[in-house]
Image (spheres, each protein chain N blue to C red):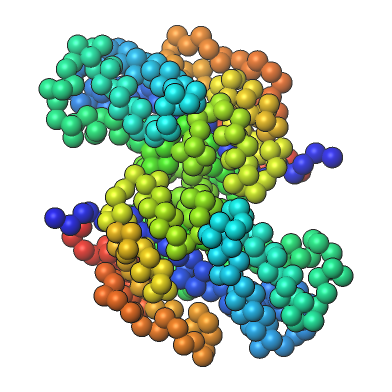
Length: 241
Length: 241
């Protein structure tokens, strides 16, 4: 017998919010690298490119757990140097303000409606590598109606470590097959499926801009494949249970 | 300089919700101990009386961390025996259903309005000994608009262990003096103050019924002393910051 699906947990960066546009806009507004919009997108990409290597240091055990805010801050300093800006010449308050751009990322246009629909029948929570305060501020800012804030900081490990998926289900008092992981990234879903979670792939073909080459199609037969969170909400809420 | 207050974290049982009425009502509805209302309140009191001794086993290190749902279930079996009901003669589903009465406790009449007001300017979260799913279900059931669900299960320790208050502030990326603990219980506030948190005492003179003898007045000069969460919201939101 198939377990009753009770919760949807979400990757956030790229799946629920448009990090690339949000970061590029705040980088431009900061005035640090000039007014060129294309260069601001390149800055966002360069900052984001340092994300995986930085949390691999934690997951490998070479470094104690650190909040994503701390990793983002270190990566911001390196990215500024790459773009010819000396971070030591800037006030720390300005750097912190820019680092908090990740707390204010804009939801994709369908996200809030889709989450509200899913929330009417299921438990919904982020299962993101963002730290708790980052995700909380983002929810307040963008109107994301989470039932709880879960993710790397609460479980003490970054995705795709298996315990992060298993501990998230355990915190919801659910078996893994009662939880569906929602992501725009095949690798996140593969790790979730290996832990027994169900899977929903949301196509976000412009997460990385107009020339995106990754995650343009599902690489496995995920339980749901949709073009938006709103579509996921409509399908999941129409199913008999 | 006084730190800027950024978050209110709440005791839940007795402070935000009326556990005694909620439990008594579901005990009566269960039909297990007959229709007498006074006896149902006595059952609620007897069940609740086992609460502190059960989590002291965890905090003392004599027992690994267990969800409050599990402690409540064990205590339910003992309380049924005390009231002359053999729990082994009952279907486990009926016992689980009654145990989940704690997930459906009714908010005090002022709670939802007060929390919504506080949420407009501050971060709000439960800091309760309830497990995450219990608090999540209670929020969905009663419309409690938390920004996040914190508490014993997330921090791995029951109040009043100091690390539970300190880790809660740390998860919010705040210093303890930027967080205010809200409770109807002086001992909870004393433990929070010892960790550097600010304190708000909410008078709930009928938490334990008409003959309550405890927590009828503040025992220290708490930062806020109010008659309701709505009043706390009005005062806190009127202050300059």
